[in-house]
Length: 103
Image (cartoon, rainbow, N blue to C red; front, side):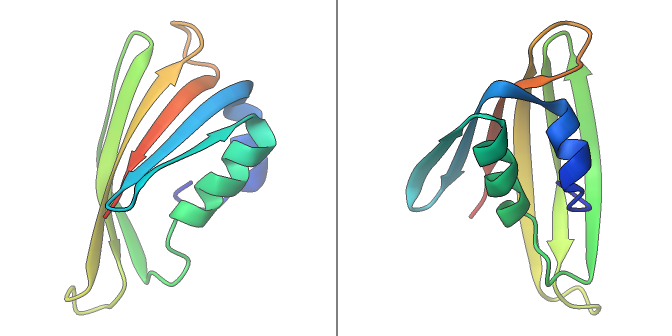
């Protein structure tokens, strides 16, 4: 998602993956690889001048990542993000479920 690489996302999203995007307006749910990849690409900020991944943590089948998009080089316009992931197996080869938290 971070660098908008559709091909890389296609390789790691399970065919029956479920994505939930949770924001102030409620929850949007997408199901299936194609629908999930398209929705994920829309969550990244293509107008950002920089992105910063603060941390990514995995434990078994679960993972989390958070950071920020900076929309101006002076650091005045920042959008924070947080994602939770569940892998299909402990080998962490495919995402089975993704939850995106955004304002």
